[in-house]
Length: 158
Image (cartoon, rainbow, N blue to C red; front, side):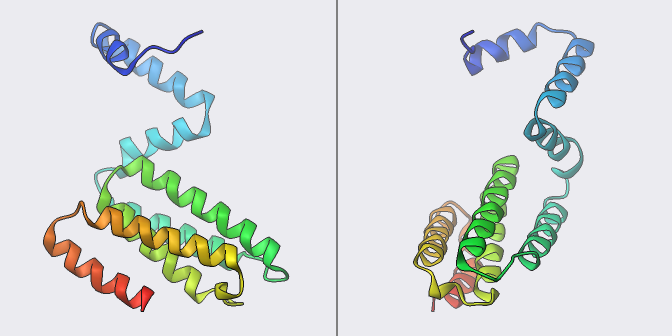
């Protein structure tokens, strides 16, 4: 089965009743965890973006505390998993400020990691890649916010 385009879906959804739309949304939520998480964000958390950011940061803290530091193999695997989750939460929000906040927090947490991430080329590359992503997202923010976040970023880099 070929998937319809977004414009085709929009036209079709406009023709459906309120009750049908609710049923479709609930049915989508049943099929995949990501759909349910996105729906949860849209319904309950999108109104309080700072609360959402704090929730994701707390989750990151828990995940970083749970990293097994016995070998760099497990550290790299765990950090990749944390970053994958952070990227998913950034996609749910779709806001550049949230992206910058969460990636800055991720980089700060990675710097605090013991043993130091600087002993692994993979982790260094991952860290530098997130710094580039932050710079890219910063360019799309308001000038006042750019200045504030730029100072935080310079602390992480320098």
